[in-house]
Image (tube, rainbow, N blue to C red):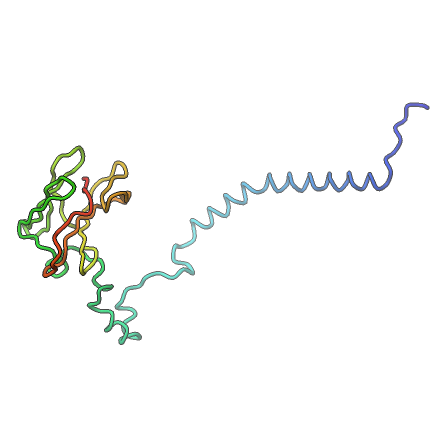
Amino acid sequence: MSGEVPAPAPHVADGLRAWRLLAVASLAVIVAAPPAYLLRERLRRAAPADEGRPTFVGREKCAPCHKREIDAWRGSDHDNAMAEAAPETVRGDFGDVSFEAHGVTSRFYRKDGKYLVRTEGPGGTMADFEIAYTFGWRPLQQYLVRFRVAACRRCTSPGTPSAGSGSISTRARGSRRTTGCTGRATP
């Protein structure tokens, strides 16, 4: 023997060649994937937001073709589900009404045409909050207030994390149920 390494059998050589091709192809995918992903994300961000996606255009645009549906919907509980706080949308008693819930006495009142609630804020400090929106119509209406959120707090109901507004509830005028607070608002 002269120290020569014998050539592999033909079927073994074909198997090694297949593994080498698979390794090269895998390496090409691994190297090309990140730039391809970044390019796709850049193109996606550059595309207009409404391109090919349905968007809300408002009831006025739908009304000419869907008069019967708009007439049935207008004034319904769904139509009144959320609105800016105004005399025609606020159903609760803001005539200087106080109540106690969760160990805190809260007061609903009006001042300078605004709807306000005085209730516990961060650290147990009482504060005044302007009602920004009504949520719901009957039998329960909640009032949403705007405030800065530093951390998740119970502001819409116990155990519900904050999304940047708080919620205080009262029953609609004429209801037999008492006023109640669904959570502590935090400014």
